[in-house]
Amino acid sequence: MPVTRAPRGIDVRRVVACRMGHHRGMDRIETERLVLRPWRESDAEAAYAVLSHDDVWPWLGAEPRRCPDVATAARVLARWAELADDVLGVWAVEAPTMTGIAPSPCGSVLLLTLPRSDGHESEAVEIGWHLHPSAWGRGIATEGADALVSRARHAGLLRLHAVVREANVRSLAVCDRLGMARLGVTDQWYGTEFVDHVLDL
Ligand SMILES: CC(C)(COP(=O)(O)OP(=O)(O)OC[C@H]1O[C@@H](n2cnc3c(N)ncnc32)[C@H](O)[C@@H]1OP(=O)(O)O)[C@@H](O)C(=O)NCCC(=O)NCCS
Image 1 (cartoon, protein in one colour):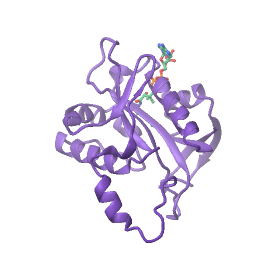
Image 2 (cartoon, protein in one colour; image 1 turned 135 degrees about the vertical axis):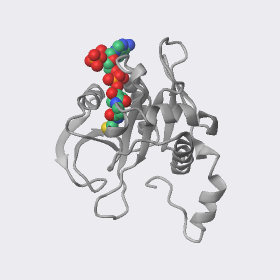
Image 3 (cartoon, rainbow, N blue to C red; image 1 turned 90 degrees about the horizontal axis):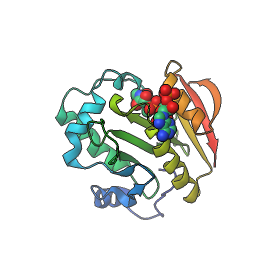
Image 4 (cartoon, rainbow, N blue to C red; image 1 turned 180 degrees about the vertical axis):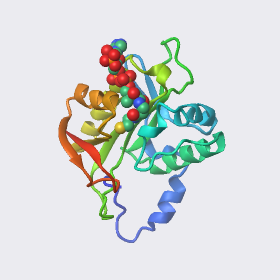
């Protein structure tokens, strides 16, 4: 993780094990219309509804796969909890005052270490988002991501990346709304080609 290096002599594996399940400093964040909070084990069905949706999963990750069942979604949530630290994490998005959105949480916004294609340790941080289609078209991704931009800035991060597939028009538009600079297609991250964006904080 770029922001939490263990001092010499500390057994990193033990530190990680102790912190698992506590979402390691992941705060609940409230915006005008949204609550961003850690995903919980009890959210597995909602996560499955999002991650198995055919308009969502093809855009996610280096090798997109449809989430096959609720048990797999629960394992994804457990992995996300392990990735959290005092700055980074995957936040569940709730829109308590908005109607017509299901499931709840309706998706995620995230700050995570951006893996380099060459396998070397990465100092880069990506911002990302995915929502159930019932939550699209209302500014939820941009509002949630904007809160994470503020969080990253206050934490002292200097730059965020967003990596998006070339055909993902809706996600490219979120990058534009956040004021990110589009750098073009690169294979520098995740071992595959994405359109890279940066936001200097
Ligand atoms: C990418 C994704 C999160 C974008 O969602 P989105 O709802 O289009 O994005 P925003 O939250 O920024 O919403 C913007 C839209 O809401 C509208 N909107 C309505 N009310 C709004 C409000 N109060 N404030 C801002 N925008 C509002 C905007 O006009 C815009 O509409 P448009 O799409 O017709 O131009 C969504 O398409 C998704 O989850 N896709 C699948 C997963 C994915 O691709 N993830 C990213 C991988 S890189």
